Length: 366
Image 1 (cartoon, rainbow, N blue to C red):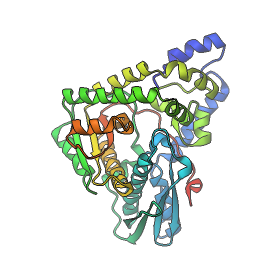
Image 2 (image 1 turned 90 degrees about the vertical axis):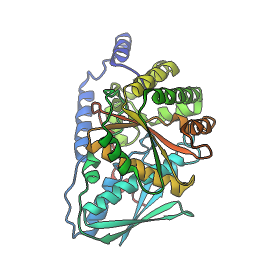
Image 3 (image 1 turned 180 degrees about the vertical axis):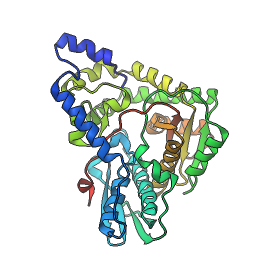
Image 4 (image 1 turned 120 degrees about the vertical axis):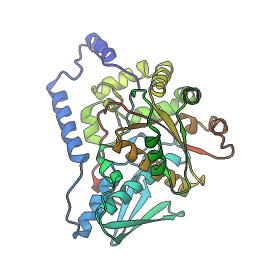
């Protein structure tokens, strides 16, 4: 949503409402900053305390990305395992009618859990239960190893802003490819300007289709947290400041949403985002089913953590795979006719933005 402080500032003059000018707003931002510091950090836990370790692994798992930051997962803690289950109450049927993104999100959380488990002296072996849609991570004692990917977990974010437009080196691209390998997932890296412009045409077509879909727009608006106080209170959704927009009272954000969240404004924003990126990564799973989608999520999370470790930002551009009518045409452009492209991700170097929040671990335990 490309809404500037100038837009909200102008409206505040008309309505006589200050933007972030009250004591309440200052307190909300302070509370938000405190929540970020408490959440996005490495913790300390006694590795001999099995129950404490497993809760800590869940804490790392929920720092993974999820569609609209819905945190569409639940965790069942067992004596020798942690099971990840889909939370159907947090589905996004408009943008994700077949739960593709939901299971990709489970895969992202599973990868965080696996990296954190190894750092805490546990090896996590995953088994998928297709009937329940559950991923059981069996934990076995091993030598602790804090990988580069584990170290990057508290710094990773989906950075929805402009990057610096500079290319990555061949070594950096190879490092991203190595991180994403595994689980039968194919990674397609596009770095040429002509290819990025072609992807932009697909993103614009997909975005236009979504912007004309009232159900999609209403669903998206329902997950936006316009104010710092709402972001802290709810602990989920898309905090507007994380996209470079101002933090404003929720009623004002809802009022202004339809005026500034426009098809042209969003398309122009995506043009700037893609043209400022070093490249675009497309992830293609080996199987177009829930188990395959989980593997895509795990591969993407390794890619994102490796990028973070190198100071490289990532953000999703999934319109070409979310709009069903556009998906096979996009697959043909990629040369995978008959396959399903799962994720489209841009990458490049750029500034950090305010991070999103998470619900308490206790709220996500099955």
